[in-house]
Length: 262
Image 1 (cartoon, helix red, strand yellow):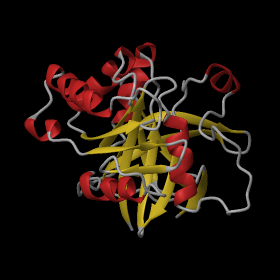
Image 2: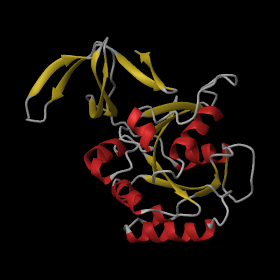
Image 3: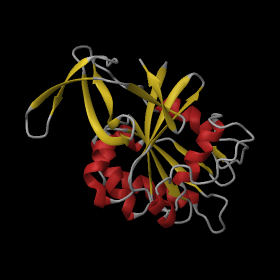
Image 4: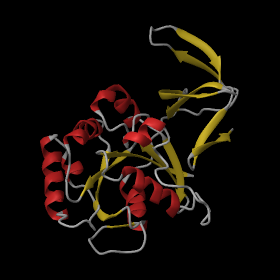
Protein backbone atom coordinates (compact mmCIF):
# COMPACT_ATOMS: atom_id res chain seq x y z
CA UNK A 1 0.00 0.00 0.00
CA UNK A 2 1.21 3.49 -0.82
CA UNK A 3 1.79 5.83 2.14
CA UNK A 4 1.81 9.59 2.74
CA UNK A 5 3.07 11.04 6.05
CA UNK A 6 1.84 14.56 6.74
CA UNK A 7 2.13 16.79 9.81
CA UNK A 8 -0.29 19.62 10.60
CA UNK A 9 1.01 22.98 11.85
CA UNK A 10 -1.49 25.49 13.23
CA UNK A 11 -1.92 28.22 15.81
CA UNK A 12 -4.32 27.67 18.74
CA UNK A 13 -7.97 27.97 17.58
CA UNK A 14 -7.14 28.10 13.88
CA UNK A 15 -9.03 24.84 13.37
CA UNK A 16 -6.49 21.99 13.43
CA UNK A 17 -8.63 19.64 15.47
CA UNK A 18 -11.72 20.34 13.36
CA UNK A 19 -9.72 19.68 10.18
CA UNK A 20 -8.55 16.30 11.50
CA UNK A 21 -12.14 15.48 12.50
CA UNK A 22 -13.29 16.23 8.92
CA UNK A 23 -10.50 14.08 7.42
CA UNK A 24 -11.52 11.18 9.69
CA UNK A 25 -15.18 11.52 8.75
CA UNK A 26 -14.50 12.02 5.01
CA UNK A 27 -12.49 8.78 4.89
CA UNK A 28 -15.23 6.85 6.75
CA UNK A 29 -13.16 6.06 9.82
CA UNK A 30 -16.48 6.24 11.69
CA UNK A 31 -19.85 4.85 10.78
CA UNK A 32 -22.29 7.54 9.61
CA UNK A 33 -24.48 6.96 12.67
CA UNK A 34 -21.59 6.92 15.16
CA UNK A 35 -21.50 9.82 17.59
CA UNK A 36 -17.82 10.67 17.90
CA UNK A 37 -18.15 14.09 19.49
CA UNK A 38 -15.95 17.01 18.56
CA UNK A 39 -12.24 17.57 19.19
CA UNK A 40 -11.22 13.97 18.59
CA UNK A 41 -7.51 14.76 18.62
CA UNK A 42 -7.60 16.70 21.92
CA UNK A 43 -7.89 13.64 24.14
CA UNK A 44 -5.84 14.87 27.06
CA UNK A 45 -7.99 16.62 29.74
CA UNK A 46 -5.72 19.65 29.92
CA UNK A 47 -5.72 19.94 26.13
CA UNK A 48 -9.51 19.91 25.97
CA UNK A 49 -9.74 22.49 28.73
CA UNK A 50 -7.19 24.86 27.20
CA UNK A 51 -7.74 23.99 23.53
CA UNK A 52 -4.05 23.35 22.89
CA UNK A 53 -2.11 20.38 21.62
CA UNK A 54 0.66 19.27 23.98
CA UNK A 55 1.27 15.62 23.19
CA UNK A 56 1.42 14.85 19.50
CA UNK A 57 -0.91 12.07 18.41
CA UNK A 58 -1.29 10.20 15.16
CA UNK A 59 -4.27 9.22 13.07
CA UNK A 60 -4.21 7.08 9.93
CA UNK A 61 -6.83 7.10 7.18
CA UNK A 62 -7.14 5.44 3.77
CA UNK A 63 -8.11 7.55 0.77
CA UNK A 64 -8.12 6.13 -2.78
CA UNK A 65 -6.13 3.11 -1.60
CA UNK A 66 -3.39 5.33 -0.16
CA UNK A 67 -2.72 5.35 3.57
CA UNK A 68 -2.36 8.89 4.95
CA UNK A 69 -0.69 9.16 8.36
CA UNK A 70 -1.79 12.45 9.92
CA UNK A 71 0.81 13.55 12.48
CA UNK A 72 -0.17 16.19 15.02
CA UNK A 73 2.51 18.67 16.12
CA UNK A 74 2.73 20.56 19.41
CA UNK A 75 1.99 24.20 18.64
CA UNK A 76 4.43 25.64 21.15
CA UNK A 77 8.10 26.53 20.95
CA UNK A 78 8.31 25.25 24.57
CA UNK A 79 8.20 21.72 23.12
CA UNK A 80 11.04 22.37 20.64
CA UNK A 81 12.73 18.99 21.00
CA UNK A 82 9.51 17.10 20.49
CA UNK A 83 8.55 19.28 17.51
CA UNK A 84 11.73 18.33 15.65
CA UNK A 85 11.40 14.62 16.44
CA UNK A 86 7.75 14.57 15.37
CA UNK A 87 8.44 16.43 12.12
CA UNK A 88 11.06 13.83 11.20
CA UNK A 89 8.21 11.32 10.83
CA UNK A 90 6.61 13.46 8.10
CA UNK A 91 7.36 13.97 4.41
CA UNK A 92 5.10 17.01 4.06
CA UNK A 93 3.28 19.57 6.21
CA UNK A 94 -0.06 21.32 6.13
CA UNK A 95 0.21 24.90 7.40
CA UNK A 96 -3.30 25.78 8.58
CA UNK A 97 -4.02 29.50 9.00
CA UNK A 98 -7.11 31.53 9.89
CA UNK A 99 -8.47 33.59 6.95
CA UNK A 100 -8.92 36.60 9.25
CA UNK A 101 -5.94 36.42 11.64
CA UNK A 102 -3.35 35.09 9.19
CA UNK A 103 -0.08 33.38 10.21
CA UNK A 104 0.77 33.83 13.90
CA UNK A 105 4.18 33.97 15.64
CA UNK A 106 3.52 30.65 17.38
CA UNK A 107 3.45 28.77 14.04
CA UNK A 108 6.64 30.43 12.80
CA UNK A 109 8.92 28.24 14.95
CA UNK A 110 7.36 24.92 13.86
CA UNK A 111 7.17 26.00 10.21
CA UNK A 112 10.84 27.01 10.23
CA UNK A 113 11.79 23.54 11.52
CA UNK A 114 9.65 21.92 8.79
CA UNK A 115 11.25 24.00 6.02
CA UNK A 116 14.75 23.24 7.34
CA UNK A 117 13.91 19.53 7.16
CA UNK A 118 12.94 20.14 3.49
CA UNK A 119 9.36 18.98 3.98
CA UNK A 120 6.87 19.71 1.20
CA UNK A 121 4.39 22.40 2.40
CA UNK A 122 0.67 22.71 1.64
CA UNK A 123 -1.13 25.86 2.84
CA UNK A 124 -4.75 25.65 4.02
CA UNK A 125 -6.56 28.93 4.65
CA UNK A 126 -9.41 28.10 7.01
CA UNK A 127 -12.58 29.90 8.16
CA UNK A 128 -13.21 31.76 4.89
CA UNK A 129 -16.88 31.86 5.97
CA UNK A 130 -16.05 34.30 8.80
CA UNK A 131 -17.13 37.93 8.38
CA UNK A 132 -14.28 40.34 7.52
CA UNK A 133 -12.01 37.46 6.46
CA UNK A 134 -9.25 38.36 3.98
CA UNK A 135 -8.01 35.17 2.32
CA UNK A 136 -6.01 36.92 -0.44
CA UNK A 137 -4.13 39.14 2.02
CA UNK A 138 -3.50 36.13 4.28
CA UNK A 139 -2.10 34.18 1.30
CA UNK A 140 0.34 37.05 0.63
CA UNK A 141 1.31 37.14 4.33
CA UNK A 142 2.01 33.38 4.27
CA UNK A 143 4.20 33.79 1.16
CA UNK A 144 6.12 36.57 2.92
CA UNK A 145 6.58 34.34 6.00
CA UNK A 146 7.97 31.50 3.84
CA UNK A 147 10.31 33.98 2.14
CA UNK A 148 11.54 35.34 5.49
CA UNK A 149 12.20 31.78 6.69
CA UNK A 150 14.49 31.15 3.68
CA UNK A 151 12.17 28.65 2.00
CA UNK A 152 13.53 27.12 -1.20
CA UNK A 153 12.04 28.08 -4.58
CA UNK A 154 10.21 24.77 -4.65
CA UNK A 155 8.78 25.37 -1.14
CA UNK A 156 7.72 28.92 -2.13
CA UNK A 157 5.63 27.38 -4.92
CA UNK A 158 3.24 25.90 -2.35
CA UNK A 159 -0.30 24.78 -3.27
CA UNK A 160 -3.07 26.63 -1.40
CA UNK A 161 -6.52 25.39 -0.38
CA UNK A 162 -9.36 27.52 0.99
CA UNK A 163 -12.34 26.44 3.02
CA UNK A 164 -14.22 26.11 6.26
CA UNK A 165 -13.52 23.17 8.55
CA UNK A 166 -16.68 23.98 10.47
CA UNK A 167 -18.80 23.65 7.31
CA UNK A 168 -16.78 20.68 6.04
CA UNK A 169 -15.31 21.91 2.75
CA UNK A 170 -11.85 22.68 1.32
CA UNK A 171 -11.16 23.59 -2.29
CA UNK A 172 -8.23 24.92 -4.33
CA UNK A 173 -10.33 28.01 -5.07
CA UNK A 174 -12.76 30.11 -2.99
CA UNK A 175 -15.71 28.27 -4.55
CA UNK A 176 -17.69 26.51 -1.81
CA UNK A 177 -18.22 22.79 -2.32
CA UNK A 178 -19.70 20.07 -0.09
CA UNK A 179 -16.57 18.00 0.74
CA UNK A 180 -12.82 18.13 1.47
CA UNK A 181 -11.78 15.82 -1.38
CA UNK A 182 -9.69 18.47 -3.22
CA UNK A 183 -7.48 18.77 -0.12
CA UNK A 184 -7.12 14.98 0.18
CA UNK A 185 -6.28 14.82 -3.56
CA UNK A 186 -3.72 17.58 -2.96
CA UNK A 187 -2.03 15.54 -0.20
CA UNK A 188 -1.67 12.56 -2.56
CA UNK A 189 -0.37 14.78 -5.37
CA UNK A 190 2.03 17.10 -3.53
CA UNK A 191 3.40 15.05 -0.60
CA UNK A 192 6.02 12.52 -1.69
CA UNK A 193 5.85 8.91 -0.45
CA UNK A 194 8.38 8.05 2.29
CA UNK A 195 11.83 6.93 1.19
CA UNK A 196 13.09 3.73 2.81
CA UNK A 197 16.70 2.79 2.04
CA UNK A 198 17.87 -0.77 1.49
CA UNK A 199 20.01 -2.35 4.19
CA UNK A 200 19.90 -3.22 7.91
CA UNK A 201 16.97 -1.89 9.95
CA UNK A 202 17.19 1.71 11.07
CA UNK A 203 14.28 3.27 12.98
CA UNK A 204 14.33 6.55 14.86
CA UNK A 205 12.10 6.55 17.95
CA UNK A 206 10.27 9.87 17.99
CA UNK A 207 7.95 9.38 20.97
CA UNK A 208 6.91 6.83 23.60
CA UNK A 209 3.48 5.50 24.50
CA UNK A 210 2.49 3.28 27.40
CA UNK A 211 0.14 0.33 27.68
CA UNK A 212 -0.75 -1.41 30.95
CA UNK A 213 -0.59 -4.71 29.01
CA UNK A 214 2.57 -4.18 26.96
CA UNK A 215 4.53 -1.60 28.95
CA UNK A 216 6.43 1.05 27.01
CA UNK A 217 5.73 1.34 23.28
CA UNK A 218 8.25 3.04 20.98
CA UNK A 219 6.79 5.06 18.09
CA UNK A 220 8.93 5.89 15.10
CA UNK A 221 9.50 5.80 11.37
CA UNK A 222 11.52 3.15 9.54
CA UNK A 223 14.12 4.92 7.39
CA UNK A 224 16.07 1.84 6.32
CA UNK A 225 15.34 -1.86 6.00
CA UNK A 226 12.30 -3.75 7.30
CA UNK A 227 10.92 -4.34 10.80
CA UNK A 228 9.12 -7.55 11.77
CA UNK A 229 7.71 -9.14 14.90
CA UNK A 230 10.24 -11.26 16.88
CA UNK A 231 13.13 -9.58 15.05
CA UNK A 232 16.38 -9.16 16.99
CA UNK A 233 17.31 -5.45 17.16
CA UNK A 234 19.97 -3.27 18.78
CA UNK A 235 18.66 -0.32 20.79
CA UNK A 236 21.11 2.59 20.74
CA UNK A 237 20.92 4.34 24.11
CA UNK A 238 21.43 8.09 24.61
CA UNK A 239 24.67 7.46 26.51
CA UNK A 240 26.16 5.54 23.58
CA UNK A 241 25.61 2.02 24.95
CA UNK A 242 23.90 -0.62 22.82
CA UNK A 243 21.24 -2.95 24.22
CA UNK A 244 20.23 -6.12 22.37
CA UNK A 245 16.48 -6.71 22.45
CA UNK A 246 13.61 -8.21 20.44
CA UNK A 247 10.52 -6.73 18.76
CA UNK A 248 7.82 -8.31 20.93
CA UNK A 249 4.79 -6.90 19.15
CA UNK A 250 4.38 -4.61 16.14
CA UNK A 251 1.53 -2.20 15.47
CA UNK A 252 0.58 0.33 12.80
CA UNK A 253 -1.74 3.29 13.20
CA UNK A 254 -5.27 2.89 11.90
CA UNK A 255 -8.03 5.44 12.41
CA UNK A 256 -7.49 6.96 15.86
CA UNK A 257 -5.99 3.73 17.22
CA UNK A 258 -3.46 1.03 16.44
CA UNK A 259 -3.79 -2.41 14.87
CA UNK A 260 -1.45 -5.38 15.09
CA UNK A 261 0.93 -5.85 12.21
CA UNK A 262 3.29 -8.69 11.36
